[in-house]
Each structure stands twice: as structure tokens, then as C-alpha cells.
Image (cartoon, rainbow, N blue to C red; front, side, top):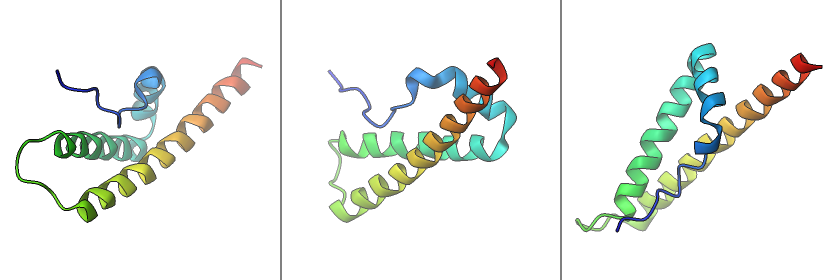
Length: 87
């Protein structure tokens, strides 16, 4: 049984992500890159193929975390805007 992809941390906010993707092409590119990198990272860590150097995996983890931070910032701003509209 394969383990769940631990890099897909935004699954619970999918509606907000879809709304942001419709509104902001830059967000859409960043999120798409995040999905690609997190999928590739998960595949590398769970593969039975030839091992990949730790430095390469660590660099991918670092880049993925930068993308996560940027996505989180967008989601916070998006949620703040939604809260302001309700008031």
C-alpha cells in the first residue's frame, strides 16, 4: 500500500485554490509548479528505481517549501479579503 503524498498539504483549501487560479494567472503558475514538484518529490522518495542523491532531494524539498510559503501567503490574503467582504 502506497503512503499518502505528504507534500499535498492544501487539499482542504481546494475551493479557495480553484477560485485563486481563476482570478490570478501567477498564482495558477505557482500552484501548478508546486503540484508538479510535490508529485515528483513524492515519486522520488517512494521509488524503487535508482537512488537519487540526498542533495538533489533536499534542494527539491527546499524549493517546494518556498512555493508552499508563497501559496500560504496568497491563501491568507484571499481569506482576509473574503472576511472583509462579509463585514
